[in-house]
Each structure stands twice: as structure tokens, then as C-alpha cells.
Image 1 (cartoon, rainbow, N blue to C red):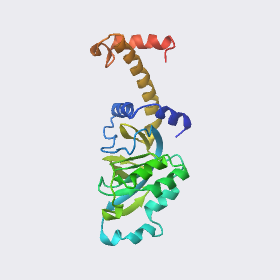
Image 2: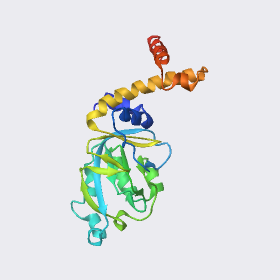
Image 3: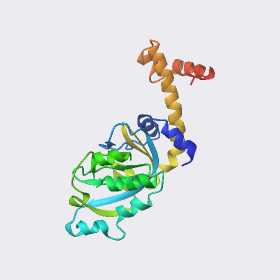
Image 4: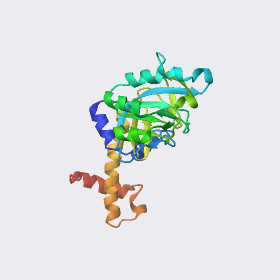
Length: 235
């Protein structure tokens, strides 16, 4: 993802992006139940580096696995590139946590942009104190091995009911997390910037007294007025 595209996406809401994806035939792009761990995390954009968990099985979920060589989650903590987003498929299990304060701090130190998981976060206040942005299904004390086992990393996953392919672009804000297929990132970003500019104009019309049916969705008269507004150099 080039810097211009990243900057464009950082200026557009997840609400706008879901509409742009819908216009391209993609409906299942907004993660269900995945929300900011703390208020004020802002908007974060990054390419997905994935981790997949599987259902817990006692021989696969012994505490010894946490320190085992090649543990996919622990390897991902060290391999997720700076600026990327670690995205973990926790099978939607909000009763256990796939992230805690030590892992969050390591990700922050390494320059990872954020973590997204459809399970919970433990040591939540300590994670918030690191300043590392997290989107998850809430807070829970038990570690992941009480309900999950390690699967793999950098494979296709499901997170919050949405398919995520390594390298897809995630945009996270106060409304949640949206997944943009890598092949569509540039055109979605361009469309989102134009949509937000048009909607800023429509807000001006609403404030000026125009009704919603007159303005949104924009009819031919509204679009003509919008083009004139742009020609006048309005931002």
C-alpha cells in the first residue's frame, strides 16, 4: 500500500468504506462485535498479518505451548511488520483472551500499527496504558489456552465473521473494523475520498434548510450543485 493510499484511507470513516465496498458487490466487510478496547484510539490503517486459532484440545492447549519453539502467535508477535495490523482469528470466543499487556507492549515497541481480534483482551487496563491500539470483543481474564489452541499464521482466516487474507487492508475506527481486499484498495480509497467530499456538501445543504429527499441520495439537481460547489474551490 503506497503512502498516498494509506493517507486517503486514514481520512475516511469505516462507514464510508463499507458503502464503497457495497457498491462493488462486497457486503461482508465489517467485523461483527469487534470494537475499540478504549476510547480515543483514533483511526488506524494497515495491512493484515494473520494468526489463526483452533478450538481448544487439552493436548494442544497445555501451558507449555506458550513457550514452545515456533508457537505461531509468539512468532507473529516478532514477525508482524511495522505499520501492519496483527489480526487474530479467535473463533469469536469472547470468554478468553488472545492478547495481554506484555504482548501489546512488544507490538508497540516493534512499530506494529494495531491488533484486531474477535476474542477478548486480558490485562485490559495495562494494555490501554501502553497506548497500543486494540480492537476486540471485550475484556476477559482467562488466557486463550483455556478455550483455544494454536493454529497457524499468515493464512486466510475469519475474524468477526469476515474473511481476511494476509495483505488485505484493515481500517479501524470508533465504529469498528472494515476489511478491504488488497486488489481493491486504491479504487476504494479514491471513491471514499470523493464520497466524503460529496457528503460534506450535502451536510451544508441540510444545514441550509434543504430536505433529505431533496439532497440524499443526491439527485441530478444536487449533483449539479455539487459540481458547481467544487468549481468554486470549496473543500
